Length: 126
Picture 1 (spheres, rainbow, N blue to C red):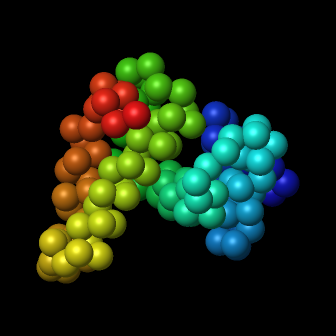
Picture 2: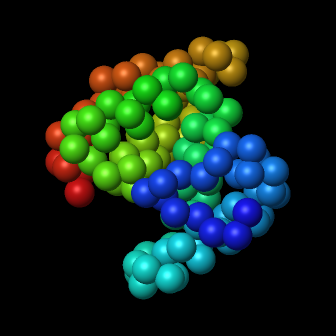
Picture 3: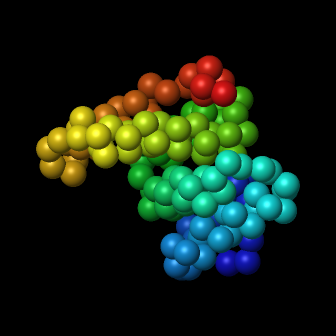
């Protein structure tokens, strides 16, 4: 895999066929090429990678959310950011000990929030 484009999304097999570090570099490279300035390019790329990993692994709720957000008018790139914003909030809750239980139980709030998250919710965050 030579390039990443969040508007097209990577082929799942190609994406999963490269290492995590290379995926992060591909995302960082895209943002550099587009001259998108970020306060923390590595963290931003890492969030892209997590969402793209979930899409490539066909995590149904994430796939459905991406499609729905695009139907609501977001570009694919913005939809990835929107999903990453929900993921970021969930990670903060996990790290803060606000979510406990088994893996399935701990991630249920993330998936439940994705099911109700809208393009309007994303625009309010921006």
